Image (tube, rainbow, N blue to C red):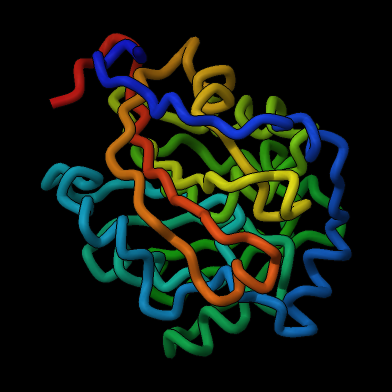
Length: 250
């Protein structure tokens, strides 16, 4: 059990180590955008976030919300329209430009001090700032702390060998009283090399359990035709809520 008193799903696939040495370069991710291999993008937004939006926002206003590996996630516009401040990081400048274009948002761009070659794209309203750089360079941009993190398509995309460094960065960005939603995928890793990578319950506990209370909100069948093309006949998506260790989930 985690410390919210909710049991994790006992079923975990064997051979979890099979993906541990898999590496994708930043250039390969940029190529996915150029070659339109972006099946991970959800044009209508993420259904689990829609379902649990009240839990995520808790009726609060003026939140700072962080989107790691944001792509052109439409949810960034949702939160900005509700009056929240959104910050994202994405390696693909093309993905960032498409976000602003598709959402009909005017924007400016400027270099990021301290990160050579990196840029930040800011909506004219000031509610959305998207940093075009590696997530691992982001701490040098001093982007401040956040009330919420929406981690979908991020932890599952990070090379398995980089997860500890990634987690350290995420935890360093959180304000007291934070809520952190993370969506991961569960499938047989011997049938697909990733990304997205298989992230079992035990890995969530290993990465976040020391500092966060962990509550699994959903475990839903996520099988699509593209997954079958990968050789999978089963894939589930799990949505976790992470909160401060001292807090009790309500």
